Image (tube, rainbow, N blue to C red):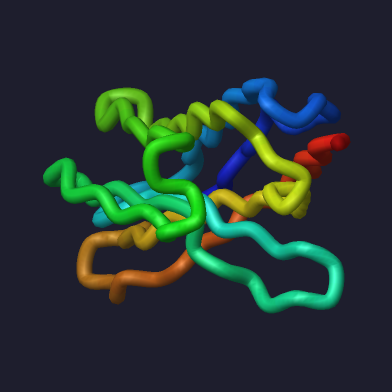
Length: 120
């Protein structure tokens, strides 16, 4: 399973960005996809996650500002980020909990990361 993320960049505070992540390769099923972020000197943290059944979780810090959505047919997840703040600055990583082959276990797969920088 390969994850290709796109959509990061530099934006002023209050602005918006939309991240996309597409899963490809050998995929039997995807249980959930989501976004994590890691700021310099900090641990990686969950931003938002959506399951194949549509259950969604958000970090408290992004509730009301970020929206995660998914397209199961395209194995793609999106993160719409509005009202961005400087503290949202981080490398954002796409994640998928997926089964690559029939009979395999659920494994966590990670994308390469995309930089989001919010200037004040």
